[in-house]
Image (tube, rainbow, N blue to C red; front, side, top):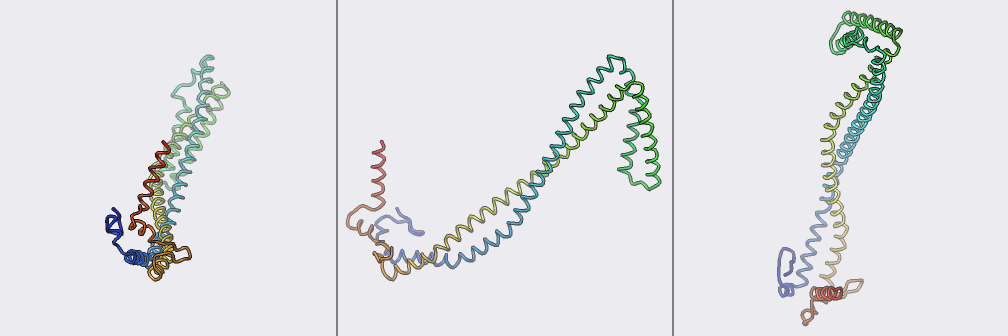
Length: 281
C-alpha cells in the first residue's frame, strides 16, 4: 500500500493516478507553503525575540544564585576548618592547664563570661530595638564600661597565668568561627532553595526557545526550497514528465518499467537488501 497525500492506495491504484494529478497536488502544496511560510517565520522570529531576553535573564539569575551559594559554601568551609583547628589547640591548652592546676580558675561562672553575655545583650538591643539617641547613648556608655572591665579581667588573668589567657582567647576565636560557619551554612541552604526554581525556570525557557528555533530553521529551509519546487512542478506540467534536460530526468521511467512487467524500484531495492544479507551470512 502507498500513501499519496491523504489517500492510501495499492500499486494498481497508484498507477492509475495521472502524473498531472500528482504534479498539481504537489504544486498546490508548495504554493500554499510559499504563501504561508513568511508569516509563520515572522511569528516564530517574534517569539524568539520575546523569549531571548527572558532566557538571558533566567541564565544570569541562576548564575548569580549559584555564585552566592558557592561563596557561602567557601565561607562556611573556611570558618569551619579554622574552628576545628582551634578546637584542637584549645584541647591541648586545656590539658596543659589541667596538669598544672590552672583549670581551677576556669569556672562557668566566670566574671568574664558574664561580661560577654552582657555585651551580647547590649549589641542585640542596639541592633533590634528602635532606640532614641539618649537610650542608645546609655547603652553605648554601658558597653564601653563593660569592655573596660573585660580588658581589666583579661589582663589580671594574663598576669596571673598567661596560658589561661591564651586558652580563653583561643576558645573565643574558635566559637566565633563556629558561629560564622553556622551562619554561612544557614544562608547557603536558603540560597540553594532560592536557586532551585531559578534552575527550573532557566531550563524550561531554554527548552522553549530551542523548540522555537528548531521550528524556525525548518520553516526557513522549506521556504528556501519552495521557489525551486514551484518552478520545477510548473515546468513539469508545461513540458511533461520525461527527460526534459537541465538535470530534469524522466520521472515516468519506473512507471513504464512496471507497466511493462518489470520490477518496481521498491521491489528491486528489497531484492538487493535480501541478496546483501545473504552475502553477509
